Amino acid sequence: MDVSPFLNFSWVEKNKIAASDFPYAEEHFKFLKSVGIRAIVTLTEKDIDNSLIKNYKFRHLHLPIEDFGVPSISQVKKFLKWLKLMEVWEQPALIHCRAGIGRTGTMLSVYYIWKGFSADESIKIVRKKRGSGIETLSQENFIYEVEELIPVIYPDREEEMFYVLLETMKVLRKGCPWDRKQTRSSLIKYFIDEVEEVVKAERENDLNNFIEELGDVLLHII
Image 1 (cartoon, rainbow, N blue to C red):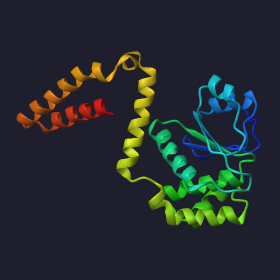
Image 2 (cartoon, rainbow, N blue to C red):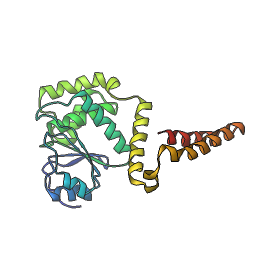
Image 3 (cartoon, helix red, strand yellow):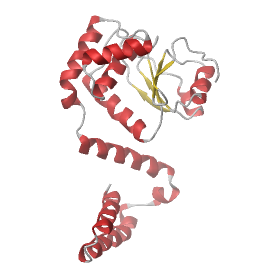
Image 4 (cartoon, rainbow, N blue to C red):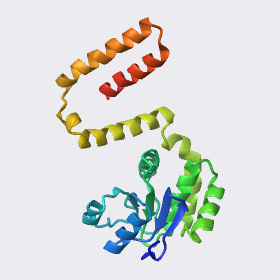
């Protein structure tokens, strides 16, 4: 494995979530690519070099948070939904701020609360895995607030699945030549064909085929 050019890089969940200080040079991006990172969450007010993001084809989310500060609730929701999407797409993600400590540790704690741990447990896990994390009392207090708010700020299962499907469709729409050519009018024929298949499956009492064809109809709607 290549020697890390980072001062503070480590895997938090092997091949899923990593954390580090700010990646600013090409050697940082080469290293991230070599260890399997495919997505990056930037928590500093200053964003990372967009040309390097494009050159190395990373997926990227920028959530600007003031140094020693805490995220907004809307940022937490966006962060969790985006991480879920990366998880479904099997895209290992790096979370970083300037030093990879306070803001990074706060968001990692939020991640573990989302995974079902208490605020106390989440803070302990992050400090054990990272050796540091959560620098200020306001960051620690925020983590306890998130523990209470997580049922409200994070979408239910149905909303989560719809979000993942919608984002996946956006990628397909952008990357598939056939898909890019389609319009509402051109899709009508395919939609009618799928509806007829649903009706046929229902008349034949074929539940498995009914579910499959209904899924195709919903796909066309989206």
